[in-house]
Image 1 (cartoon, rainbow, N blue to C red):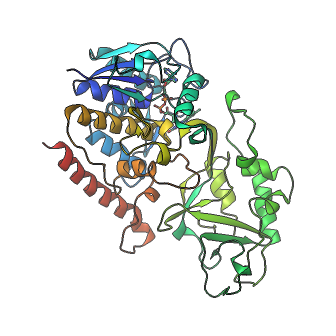
Image 2: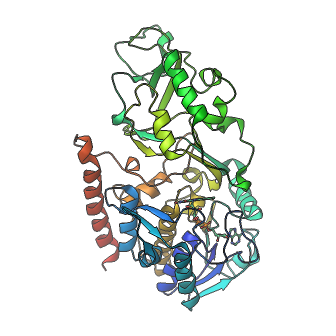
Image 3: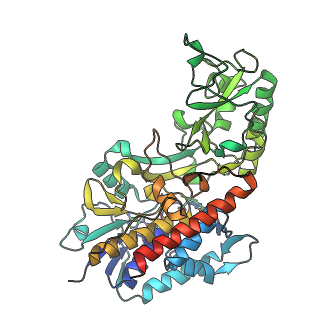
Length: 452
Ligand SMILES: Cc1cc2nc3c(=O)[nH]c(=O)nc-3n(C[C@H](O)[C@H](O)[C@H](O)COP(=O)(O)OP(=O)(O)OC[C@H]3O[C@@H](n4cnc5c(N)ncnc54)[C@H](O)[C@@H]3O)c2cc1C
């Protein structure tokens, strides 16, 4: 019997998923709240609206997002078909004419006879239209600004502590770009242990020690740095636990030194004394290839983040794997609540895709919708599908959703999500090596899963 999938949300993930499912012969009912209701960021009535920038970021294969786009093309992505069709010149980036892009996908959906577009809002995952009397599976693709009632319904199913509605992201840097003659490894208060030996650094964190003048230089730059303008709906009160570092700095010269940069429990091995302030860096992955600037969630412009954080001793040449950001964002604690196939662990008929899963970015959201379509097609056909390898961009992105950590946060795709290559290499060869390995791994996976 013909299988039916209800897709909620005709954004980037929803359109990609719906079109792929329909192409494979499945029936789709696509529920989109527009034009009757719009989120605070959506301004048009078309599907697949790019709500902010019109750039899909780097087109180069030596970047995580460039690789992801290429892998999507090879999987037959409609999102990438539209992007390539609507491309406008933007040097090494892939930028698109946003209206043409949205029209292209809106028309594709309209022309697809297996997709029924229903211009209605879904307020509850228990809505009768989503029951198994009406559809076999539900794909929830309602995005980071999913309507309030629907977000609450999801939170009710998952438990409130597994749903987040605000995103405060600290930058991530490549560990090897830090100055190892300054940065030291230690956990707080380890220096107070009886067997403490400063000559044998150990502990879970890397630490950048600051003398008073260095701290003040950083503090002043932070106070003067240019930040992203907040949209009206983002003028939310900041939660005390995730204040932007620059907002915290405005409270006074010593606030950071008594807060996220407090030096208690540390001894700088170079001086044998407690520094004036310490920036802690926490490993993002088991091999410490990248690390997170603890407590440094920020709204600073990306160029400002580079300039200001590089003032911290040990960070002068820091390379950023991901920049910090803060915005309203509905997403789930994916490692706890989602299976690898993006189904809810406690409701096997409901699947998530797009930014609501905990991926971040236009391309990543669409890639997630594409993967969900592959999963559902295989399931409806009774076929098996293996997960893309972690060495590939798609596999690395999906792997992020399965990586348990203390505080799960959304992520763009970047090389830091991939396993580090076994052999040591020079910094300048690294991107090429990651890219070549990813291309090979993805080609094998494609052949093994799709060439029958
Ligand atoms: C303000 C803002 C700016 C951003 N800027 C960028 C950027 O510049 N670059 C970048 O790469 N990423 C950006 N992102 C992140 C993200 O990539 C985009 O939000 C992206 O559109 C997410 O894709 P999606 O498919 O998950 O959700 P969306 O594209 O938002 O699609 C969700 C769809 O679901 C619909 N919907 C919501 N609730 C319901 C409901 N209850 N019933 C029916 N339909 C519903 C919405 O109307 C929408 O059409 C931004 C995010 C935000 C919030």
